[in-house]
Length: 134
Ligand SMILES: [Fe+2]
Image 1 (cartoon, protein in one colour):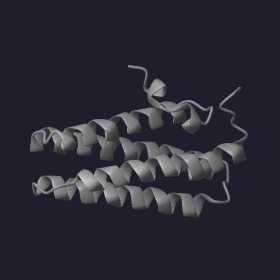
Image 2: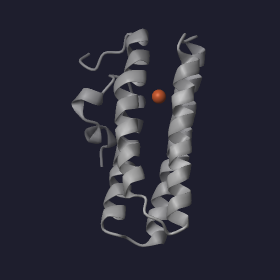
Image 3: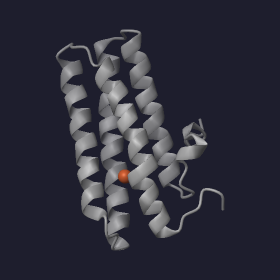
Image 4: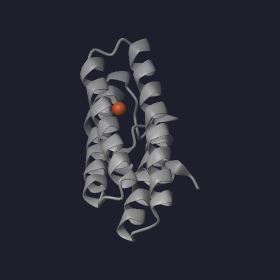
């Protein structure tokens, strides 16, 4: 499946691989929400959370490296946001492993992720002069 096609037009920043990676993150969050909604097996849910954690850690790391290379002035606050998102994901991970309800946390995670792309990531895209319509 084309990950980029899963990134809504409004969230596209006009730069690969960033857009494609956001598409993968959004797909994984959607799969997790669906799994939690249908009360899927704990093993499958935990596997999805694990994939999301590993992938997000990699994606945030590559974004952070790019920001450092470009001496991005808002690097610090952007990294703080990444840390908060990862901490939230770890909270979901713990909740799922304890067999607790995590649907509301996953909904919140999706809102945060979409909000992060639409504000913090877009600000970096504008700083870099990326264009979704190029
Ligand atoms: Fe980011």
